[in-house]
Image (cartoon, rainbow, N blue to C red; front, top):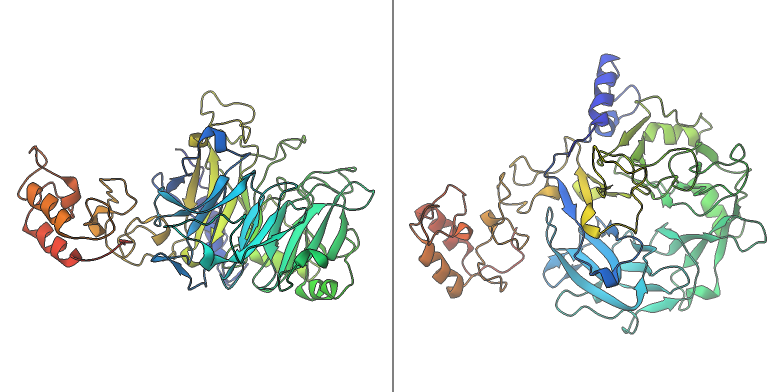
Length: 487
């Protein structure tokens, strides 16, 4: 897959201009140097055609949670939502997914958001369908619960498009405005209430456009915008993004709603459809979406706005200048650059940016637009991007977020049985979750065999040198009696 590395281009321009981290931002290097490789990509769960929704949603569990379900730590792990299922990524760098929950309704998923402390999930199951709130400890790999009926899960009647947690108590949502004027609104749900639907708190009563994304940075400042203009674009265009201080949001929670057009600060005049929105670990703002229904031609990429610009705007500074690579860059993993809605997400603990690439059409036969929902799931993948300082626990040159054995060096990433665990860490040949006599029997069968021999088994060739020998035997004995997951 060809990728126009605009991150590298921006870095070169900054270096040529003599700009350092102390010049534009303390995090300018991280901002401008996200990079990827062709192997740094994931595919979505194998959802049957009958179960597909408009798109497969994905995100991540909290980077601060210590919740473990069935021996799998949730911290920083990706999830996916489609059809009737919630899935969890079996291992970093792996496209093997395991169901951890189901619902009775067919989800055209709106969102799955995890509270900052990682203890609570909020699952919006689609337009005019329930919002479910529950503890992440209810999720299970061995026995996925039906959240529709599970004890401890609250079903909230609410209307929504997207959501984000302000803190561990308040969940902010956006929706069609409840006024006679065309537009959308932002409101908050107090999840500490037994029935949160009894007391919705209006934050922004009317935005002159369709719902966009919404997000909080690490200091509690808030961003949202116009997902599709309902008025004169000169007044409020598709992809307009505004930001409000944490203090303004705190005031709104006490009963003083914010007027969209006269409060906050304009951060961007038009970036895609301003959905989704989020912040990386350095509070650079990432933006996805696409103006597929408008005429701007803004689609087929994700954008990143430099954190210093966001800070400056909050202080009354000018909006982002998209022509300035020190303020703004674009990521286009799809060589046709024609996705109608590019999804982007960031994983704090892995310093990993995840961007969807819809490959329904490819050069030289690029369609005008690859339309979400009309293409087979196999045509869309998740491309992974990392800054130079992304964690690489085992030091093998593969960032943890792309590494299928992130504590065991394996630069080749070989996974002979396709179970999601790199061979270097995996001696569970029969995939029953434990390394025991049955696995040893398979190892003995392959012992002293080379790639040209009929009994060669790549699962036993832990160092991938083309033969199963005493070096591999030593590795096997180290793995003896170990239980999954295998990292």
